[in-house]
Structure formats: structure tokens, C-alpha cells
Image (cartoon, rainbow, N blue to C red; front, side, top):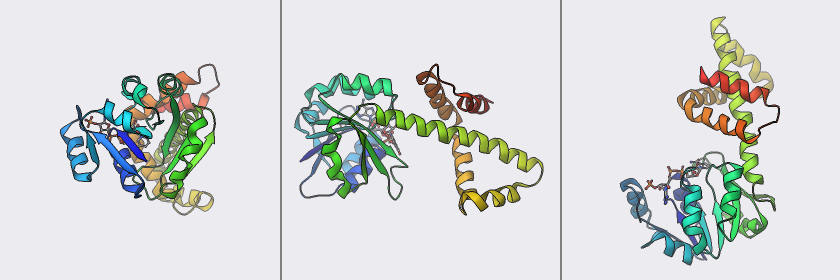
Length: 244
Ligand SMILES: NC(=O)c1ccc[n+]([C@@H]2O[C@H](COP(=O)([O-])OP(=O)(O)OC[C@H]3O[C@@H](n4cnc5c(N)ncnc54)[C@H](OP(=O)(O)O)[C@@H]3O)[C@@H](O)[C@H]2O)c1
């Protein structure tokens, strides 16, 4: 089996390292890529084709892991050359996922949940063809959600609306605790019900949110746009909080 990779960043590199089998050959291309990506490709020892068109033609599974902005473009340009499964792993909206589906033959809507370089990232997939990817369970936990393209994309938005709203609330309550000089006690009482690692997890969540508040806020805007007409009081409040 041949797995083709379009994009060779964190996601693809980790998949390449996780999925090791004598029956699977990975291919990619350096066509038009940056110095950094070319270096990563050369260091990895992956088989390199002259063009991404060649990668698409040869692959039984073609994985797109590039960037949210280029996902649709990549599908439009290379999707038509692929007769195998087209697995999109980009962080894109359900609308973009459906547009991509109209450009490729055997679309699978996918998402890596959890950091790709964490101990056990989970690959969620949906779409009629997603069943055919369950063999990946041997290498990375792979869960099929449904036969519907777009279900994984919506699930990502639901997860994102919960985690980002929670982060905004955490920032606010922790600031209040600091104001009353009760930060340590605040984490201690919550750990009683939320678990021993509550403080570490919360601080990591808070720091992550503050460090990338612009991107997180853009993601909240996407959620508000996508679920237009639905009551989203908490998400909108989180958006306002992160704006300040
Ligand atoms: N990192 C995670 O934990 C994670 C988890 C879930 C989902 N995702 C999603 O997965 C995708 C990839 O993430 P990443 O962390 O691997 O990103 P990354 O480390 O920034 O790598 C992106 C790779 O895609 C390449 N690329 C960009 N545009 C391309 C194009 N038009 N054609 C071919 N290659 C192109 C880049 O090459 P150049 O260097 O030449 O630009 C780079 O090799 C993103 O959409 C991200 O939202 C990431």
C-alpha cells in the first residue's frame, strides 16, 4: 500500500513515524516547499516524487495535512488525480470540508485530536470510506464517527467551543482568585472535584490561550459564524473576554 503525504509538517512527520509497516510505503514531494520542510523530508528518509501530482496518482491513501488556508486549494489541484482515499486532516470548517468533498473522489473527513506529538493522539474519521482506514488502529487509535462527511469537522468545532470557553472562564476566575490572594486555595478546592492534575492542566490551558489569543479568537469567530442563529451566549462571552 502507498500512502501519499501532501504537507510534511508536524502532523505528517508524526504519522510517518507512527505508521511503520513493511506493507506500507510513504511518498511525498519537495515541489515548491520551504527549506525547513525539504530538510525534514530529507532527514526522514521518506520516498520523494518529483511532483505532488505524481504523489496523488500513485497513492492508495492521499493525506492532506498542510494548513487550513491551503486545504481547499490542495484538494482542487491534486484531488482529481487521486483514485484512492483522500484523507483531509486540516483544521477546517465543516463548509470547507464539504467543498473539498465535491473535488475529490473518496473523501474521508479526519481530525487528529490531542497534540499530534502527544503520547497517544487519536485519529477521528467520518465518511463512507472511513471504514477502510480502521486498519490504522494497529499504529494510531482510529475511531470512525459516522458515514457523514462533515461530522468530524462539526465535532472539532464542538470540542473547540467547549475548551476555548472554559479557558476564558478559567482566566477570569483565576485573576479574581489572585486579586483575593487565594490562588493556591482556588486550585486546591477545585482539585477536590476536578482531579489532582487540575492546577497543572488549568495553568497550561491558560498559558496556551494567552500565548495564542489572536488565533483562538479567530477560531471562536469561526464557530459563531458557522452556528449562526443558534444560542451561543457562552461562546460569545469567551470571544469578548479574549478580545480584551
Ligand atoms: N499540529 C497538530 O497537532 C495538529 C492537530 C490537528 C490538526 N492539525 C492540522 O493539520 C494541518 C497540518 O498541521 P501541522 O502542524 O503539520 O502544520 P505545519 O507543521 O505548519 O506543516 C505544514 C506543512 O504543509 C506544507 N504545506 C503548506 N501548504 C502546502 C501546499 N499548498 N502544498 C504542499 N504542502 C504545503 C508546509 O510546507 P512549507 O514549509 O513549504 O510551507 C509544511 O510542510 C493543519 O491544517 C493543522 O491545522 C494540526
